[in-house]
Length: 598
Image (cartoon, rainbow, N blue to C red; front, side):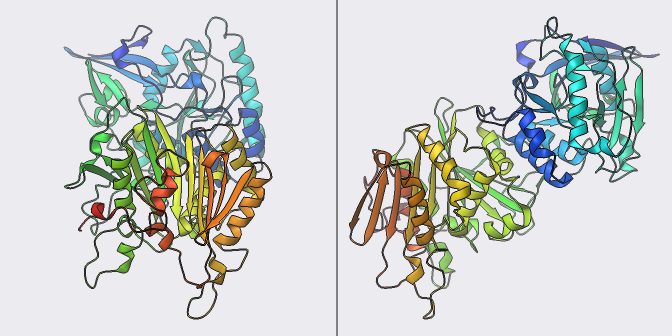
């Protein structure tokens, strides 16, 4: 005999198995649900999904959704009893705050990307049934007459209002955070997806008596999204027979799959997104990981020199991240996570640098960010410095942004940040040459520069500065805390000659963009100005804002010289007590002993 007993919500689940949604904290200035409705309404489906993904992965999710609800089930087959507890969001995916949130229907691909990022999966049909049976609050389905409008944001918002009115009648007895079901169809995983590629599987919309309105249905393409769809996230870590297991492993096990599936065992349990891919055969040593992997410090590989460890992975579309961390990472120390966007045409290995041997590519000897970072770690041991190199397949961040836009940039950075989510983390945004474009793209994608960003530095890389887009954001960010710093390094590039000719305009190069930035900032921030040795120093906020502009009477190309000659070191230390301690900006290399021999 085969029987199943729903045990329902485990209100007294042990603290050892309690779980929260793995997302960054919500920024105090993040847009509300109502504001996002206005922002999303005019967008195309693709742009809308990018914006929702960016908001969720930046942490713009209500607090009440973050503590996952444990749901238990027991399966008895013959004389064998198996038990499982899985953990789900108390309601469907929403963006905004507790006071003003918006349920966000999305395509299965975006839902899977969000689930991957948060360490979650999507439910099976049987899991949806279990959740409804266990729910503390069961809302009656409220269909809206079908029509073309059902796939539009205004219709999403209309249904959102209906559901919130229903939910309000239960708030006194069951406040936000209680498990709720019945008000949406679930986007689910199904073994039938193997026979229906490019489709979305939906199921549920249970009536209060437990009968679903929507049977399992795969008739829509994966681009179909309407107001009735909801995304319930399920933690990948579950408890089976009192042991922690991975959801995918349980679904793939014929002896255990029946706990969570009424379709038998699953050969796969996700929609394909290619969110994170493995390395190519030509890069066997960098340790790329599969799409469902969620990185921790345990995934880093030790390096033979300099007491450091590394992790590399790739994210679609076409982004490679290589992270270098100290080998010792005490849990009680704040992490300084530095994002270094690569210059045009350079690889990560060239950016890291090494001792140049005869006949080797000169690109390995023009930045030495690896050696400058090692020097910084020894000079400033107060907190671990973690450096994330950001490379893209086009070898140009301006070209990458032109092709892919800015909305997904915060998610790229958050993929690295979440590795250290169990620690206090501060962020530095920096880069050389076209790498500065990524910083401006990030600024374009967020409503305001987040509070965890403590330093922004442009190493001859502020070509993309636009006062109308960036000045006020920079000023508000700098004015909010005396712990923040901005450093700009540039030179008189418009007079420099390449093959006897100039190559940038007076306004379009970093000299011109720095003059424009200085003018915009000086309207709100007092600056001092001095020139010494051909270096113009414009300093504000007690040294926390520095624009160092090198004159160029000899009309040389000093683009990489500014980085090589301790530029990264100075960009990291400008305005701190360590500024100019043991190095001189534009002086001899201070980091020679820290250059790797290979």
